[in-house]
Amino acid sequence: MPPNILIVIAVLVGGIWFLRKLGRATQGTAPALIQKAGGIAIIGFSGLLALRGNMNMAVPAFIFGLGLLGKGAAFPNGFPWGQKSAGQKSRVNTSKLSMELDHDSGGMDGEVLAGPFKGRRLTQLTAENLQAFHLECRSAGDQSQALLEAWLDRTQGEWRATWGQGSGAASPGGGAMSKDEAYAVLGLKKSASAVDIRAAHKRLMKDFHPDKGGSDYLASKINAAKDLLLG
Image (cartoon, rainbow, N blue to C red; front, top):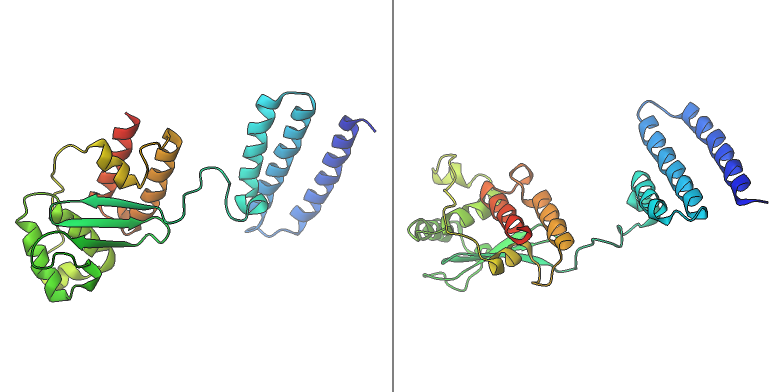
């Protein structure tokens, strides 16, 4: 039987199945069903294009169809392209603090680089220790205060009211970012491609955007790193 006839039969069978499912669908499930049906139709169309030798259009159509179906339909662990490496971490440094952002968990922790608490992690400091370290960061004259407050905002949401700090955030300040710092902020190696840079930026902004429990300071660092590396 010619391939074109097989495709026509498949489309007819699929159409009948879809109409039956749509008739049973509720108002809440109908949009998802229509989206999946569209994905199946586009994948079928990509097969027709491939049979005709038009691979330049078949491949993008197939990928788009998979996107409509949802990555879990074909790739339960996510699409094999553009995935992050396990254990990937970003790092932001100031004179007083080295902050680490874990891409897997979205968690943050920092190591004190100078002063009485040198060598200790922020998670190891008591509330009194943190207040004392905050005063040190305020006098550092760089981004240390903004970086510490970004961590406090994410991990101890009521610290401003408890410490009587008001609602204002420290001004990030600081000089121009270097390329080495930009790669560190995004948690990438210097060999990273433009696709890697955009993927890391998107992933970090999902976790560290102010609306997601991050801060304006961290968002500005992540945006600046992407802009610098992409020129």
